[in-house]
Length: 195
Length: 173
Image: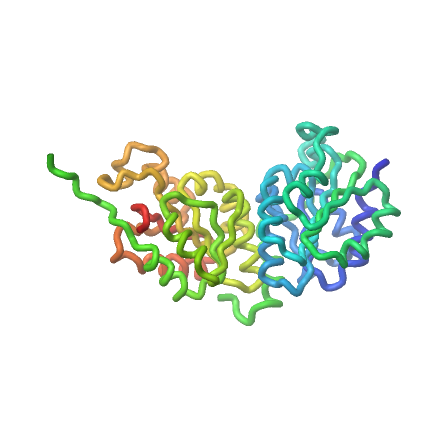
C-alpha cells in the first residue's frame, strides 16, 4: 500500500498551527497546493539550491527557538544527500523537531531514476539507529491522519517516513533568492534588526 | 643544521575563544578540525558558546543558516578539506540565499615554514585561489597579532550577508 503525496501533505498543513514549516524538492509544489499563499507565509521556507539541506536548516531553527515546533517535509533522495544529518539531529536532540520524509523511491525531479538500494533501504530503521526519540513508517493516508496529532505531541526529534506513489514531478519553480527572502521573513519574527 | 623559520605561528586557543566570546557568538558548529583541536577542547569545557558537532560541512552550513534565521549568532569551525567539500551548500545557502556564514578554517597539513602558496600540497595552495574564484572574502590568521581577523571577517559576513573565511595557518596551541 502507498499514498498520494497530497494526502499526508494536507494532513500536515491542517495541523501545523504556528509551527515553522520547511519543504524541499517535490514537497514544495504539494505544500503550495495545500496551503494557499505558502510562498509568502512568514512561517515557511522552501529549500532549493542545496539539496539535502532542509533537515539541517530545520535543526538550526529548532535549536534557536526551542519553544516553537519545526516541521520539515523532506524527500528520500534529498535525505540521502545528507544522510548523516539523521545522526547530527539525534545528537543535538531537539525536542521540537519533526522530520517527515516523503518516500517515493525515485529522483522525481530529474526524471524518476530509482534510488540506490530502492526496495531494500529502510529509513525508519536508519532514524531509529541514529538515535531519534521516535521513528515510524506509514503507507496508509487514513492511518497517518489519525496518528498525526499524537506524533506532533511527542517529544522530538520525531522521524516519520511516508510511503507515497512513485512520481515524476515538475520543477518547483522556486529559486535560491526566494529562499533567502523567506528565510529573512521567518527571521523577522525572532529579531528586531537585520544585523 | 639551522632550523627553518616558521612563517605561521601558533595562536593560543584561549585568544581565539576570547575573540569569539567578545563577538557574542552563540553557537560554534564544527566538523572536527585537527588543526584547531585545542580550540575545540577549550570550547567543549565551556557552557557558552554552545558547541554543535555535525557529521559533514554541508550540514554545518545548513545548521548555521537555521540558527541565524532563529535569531542567534552562529559560526562554523571546520578544516580546509571540508571547505572544499561544501562548496555547493556555500553557494546555495550562504551566497544565493544571502545568509551570513562565518567560517574559521584550519589549514590542516600546512607546512608552517612555507607560505600557503609555496606549500606543494593542493589542499593548502588551492584554498586561497578557490575562495578568490568564488569571490568569498578571506583573511589569514598566521600569527597571534592577526587575531582581529576573526572580528573583521565575522562582521563582514553580517554586512555582505554571505560567506567569509579566516584561514588558520598553524595548529592552535
